Image 1 (cartoon, one colour):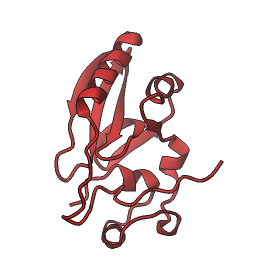
Image 2 (cartoon, helix red, strand yellow; image 1 turned 180 degrees about the vertical axis):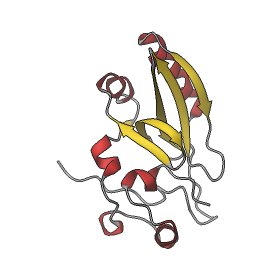
Image 3 (spheres, one colour; image 1 turned 60 degrees about the vertical axis):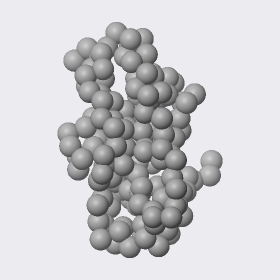
Image 4 (cartoon, helix red, strand yellow; image 1 turned 90 degrees about the horizontal axis):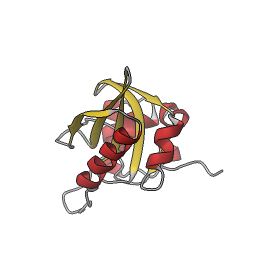
Length: 149
């Protein structure tokens, strides 16, 4: 399997003249409610990207477990996580959720998200690389789902 390369603008940072198309939050939210219903859970939170946050977050409670599904603001990339705050996101693999999400999005797996970030392995823009030096992300997940300003 080829290693995934993160595309340019994955950080959500782009020069003003670049027009990035936002993902549809309504579809994402609707899917979240369908997933919650299917697994006898409930949606307990939904947040849209708001500067500097570059992702949607949907929180689902199933039994005693609370999981968050993160959707990148501009790319069809999702991750499943336990979410404490913007700086403490613990990625998970949930076979059930992966099966539900994969027809619609690219589900990023825990191993890739927790992998140490190497700027040479990806296609970031100069602006992004400059920000990467400032923010010093440790993992791919910190680059993809971030709150850089």
